[in-house]
Image 1 (cartoon, rainbow, N blue to C red):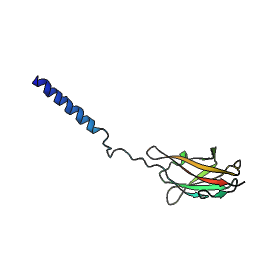
Image 2 (cartoon, helix red, strand yellow; image 1 turned 60 degrees about the vertical axis):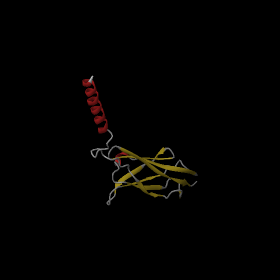
Image 3 (spheres, rainbow, N blue to C red; image 1 turned 30 degrees about the vertical axis):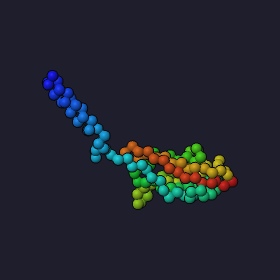
Length: 127
């Protein structure tokens, strides 16, 4: 009987020791840094003319080829240029089909570490 008790103790020590190994958040795992979006033009809730231009800055950790921009659910034409101090300048035009409505300029992109980020702002498009 004593022999079986020693085996149980040994078994529990192995199970408990291996369970502590998981979820430790070791330093070898890479932190996720979501892409950031700033410097929105036109400003939040500002009025913009039909077909006018918009721009924003994407953070330096953003993969520029993954940037997607939609205006009120419609894909927008835009271009991405690197900035001298880091990051990317994204500029495009509002769709001519949107008139007299509030529209969200929605942004989505991927960044280093397989992180996804979203952002955007609301503008009023004049008639």
